[in-house]
Amino acid sequence: MTTAPDAVDPFLRPGRAQLRLAEPARPVCDRLGLALAGGHALRAHGVPACAQDGLTLVADGGTDLPQAAAELAAAYRAAGGGVAERPGTPRLEQLSVRLTLGGRSHTVELRKEPLGHRPVRLDLGAPAAGEPPLTMTVVALEDAAGLATALLADRGLPRDLLDVHALTAWYREGELLALATALDADFQPAVLADRLETLADAADGRFRARGAAGGAVAGLKRWALAWSQDLRLDLLETQEAADGLHDPYLEDVEALEDPEVEEDVEALGEREGREDRELVEDTGEAAPVEDAAGARSAGAREEADGATGSGGV
Image 1 (cartoon, rainbow, N blue to C red):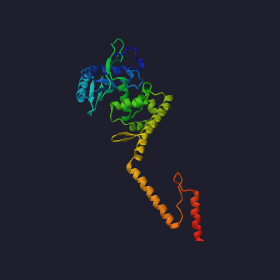
Image 2: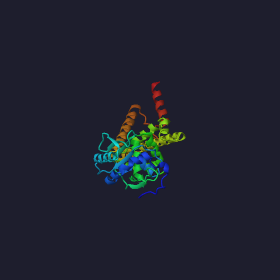
Image 3: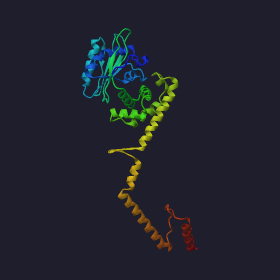
Image 4: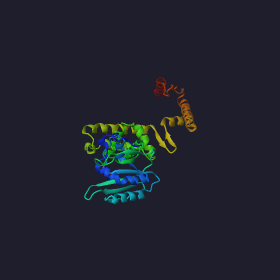
């Protein structure tokens, strides 16, 4: 699927430098099945995410990431750019690309991510007037949202919070959690709650530097804190065990039905019975009767006290 040229707000389209950065990468992406992700993908879907200086590309599990990075580097060099390859990991490769002599360097990030939906072809706009628009394969909005939420928990930068907050116009918070969990089995809501609380205390200037309006920062922080508190409450209501999630209420019911617990209750009753018999033998008086709540009646206590007092005169 390819969007119409006017389907996305022109303000959300990549800048000229970013489109020039994407041009040499497009043939490699088409050949290896790479898809555009990150802020550019969100904005291509119409989400007002933070502007991104470099590019983020994702590959599926069957892609040789180092080989893909090498082919991207070769494509940039063939286009006259300078490339510096940074040390990578099995899931992440990074290139520092300078398109023109003396120009700025841009980071091209290549990640290995499992995608749950088929990527789509989207029109990113024309690099310059009179040039044809650049069309690239972009991750589906559902995957872009899940990756953004997982990145907020993993990295926790102000721009990550702004991106996920922008997504709440499309998805509820619970849906964002589900999308992130679907892509990352190790995703932990507790870690996300920590990130949200930390960012709720961050300086306002860090958000304004990423394009947030000054009057919107306070509301953004309140939202982050409220979501973190909701996550904490959810975590308190459920306890994670090796065989799944258990409701504490159900665990209490199971404990009451446990034969060992019943035996303990019977043993307690027998012990209290022995104590009452010993009291009768020592005082010659009947043991005070307990009410329904298990507390001794005030009258029984007064009679016992009176008997003790008479014996002492």
